[in-house]
Amino acid sequence: MKISVKQTQHGIFSVAFDDVAHTLTTSELKRMLMAAVKALSPGAVPTISPDDEARELGERLKSASPPGLQRFLMSVRDDDLLLLLKLTGDDQDLHATLFANMSQHKHTMLAEDLQYRFHDGEIPADAQEDALHRILQVANQLAHEGAFGQAD
Image 1 (cartoon, helix red, strand yellow):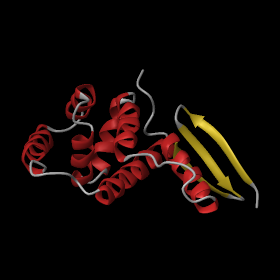
Image 2 (cartoon, one colour; image 1 turned 60 degrees about the horizontal axis):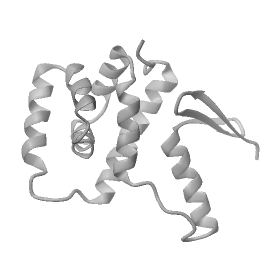
Image 3 (cartoon, helix red, strand yellow; image 1 turned 60 degrees about the vertical axis):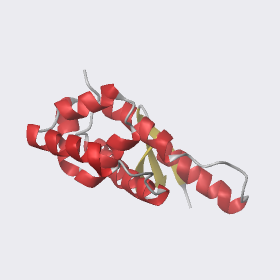
Image 4 (cartoon, helix red, strand yellow; image 1 turned 120 degrees about the vertical axis):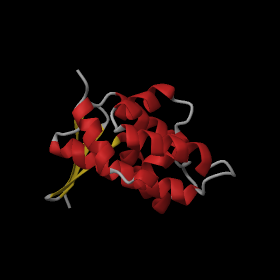
């Protein structure tokens, strides 16, 4: 099996297994490598936390072009976006960027849900990981299509 890895843009990699290519972010590539190491040597490496993964994604989103960001916001599930907002609650720049690129109705709905939905406790780690995985898939697909370019 031939395996190749190429960086296509900052924080985005194309990983090919024979003739099948996949687009991965830095954190996804790290997660894949960690999963391989864990399979070969259980307990050898720690995992990437959902909080760290959300922060990395937030940095990527803050540097996206407005049209790409708007397409991203229309493509992700509201529940997943809400979880991302919760996980990045201390990143006011990210929240401002996201809210500035969505409709007023969606902004109001998400802001209200964010205030009331998670008030009673922690979000299960598997729910965080699932939501982040779905969001990363959307971001990577848009990056692969060239619709998720960097801001000027």
